[in-house]
Image (cartoon, rainbow, N blue to C red):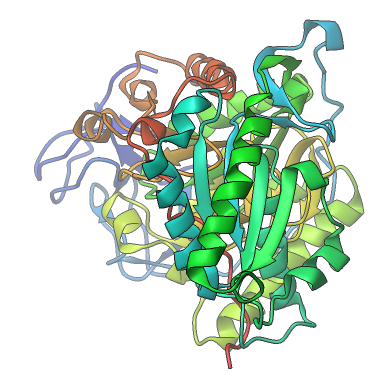
Length: 508
């Protein structure tokens, strides 16, 4: 791809993407295309005359309808484009193909922590997981007291102590799917392979009772799991004192874990895009999709999420579903979301956000077509509820909102041990206990926010790197990060406040 001012993504497109800021009156092609107005970088320009009601085509697919006459060379954006209705594909699995796996003995490897249950961690933390918000301050207090004591200095092989706190856990029904989302998120963190040991801390009278959670999910091994409540321990001070005694044993146990070579089949990567822009679907997301294909061929797992952000592009996934059942489950999720948004007086096109639009995205259809590129090209092997344990290998889907902290909470709870997060506007996201690799879609933002970005894919749009080359870099970075190399967010010690379970219930 040579460096030009415009990029046409498909021969059928009636718009092009501007690769730099365009001034009005600029001649942009040998065919005499002249910019009618100023157009920001990453935004769209009309290649033809487009009449009201006519389809706007990008990636060779419909992203919206013109709301007025659009002149050739005119800026195409929210002021002259509206959401288009579409018909969903029913050809489940029509494009599914057999994946060419790397031989097991030749798989890529990394240095991970092998846990007693056979799962592998990419980090070695000790966690304090709360069942309810009422124990959140005590959990944070316990972590602070431990850090002040200097006890961590005795265990350099332990990455830290992480309090997992949230704003829920009480005055809610306990016999519905909404409550299951909360419980599965909490339990997924409490049993995550990146935690060597976990203390579950409750208040005692909350709706989300710890004994009921243990009954529902099964108590983990005693050596790595402890639980009690503030009320049973005698209040905050006594709970912290009890917790400090537990930490002495927990840290010593965690320090016994050592990294060892394991193959890439033990990696489960959460795919996420946040603060997307007009470049995301052209650079960072396709490059991540290439890395996903490499991961899957090496026996690993990649989890796509953000259900509203595949809306209108889900056929690109259902067409390669491993079975009709898998394809139907994905479509049923979209139908649930349509109903859910309508009940709350919202609509699916309320995503993109203002930042997405400022970066060049116009409708959810356009955003979704770019977002799905993160999923690569292999078969869709499973569809999971929010926080449900992933059991399939290869590409899977985990239901979640598009709001990044809530979505990633569900992916991590489902078992993901690495996060790959593409961004065009610039996300400062970090996560504990799972490292988050942030991938910039454009060089301008990468230069502006280098302290927060791990990789830059802007060179793809500039014509100096291919999608395959960038994807290979991402895959290698995944392996290095899984082996202990710190991400930017880890260097900045970001990730203590990002546990954000999805709340769909009535709080009474």
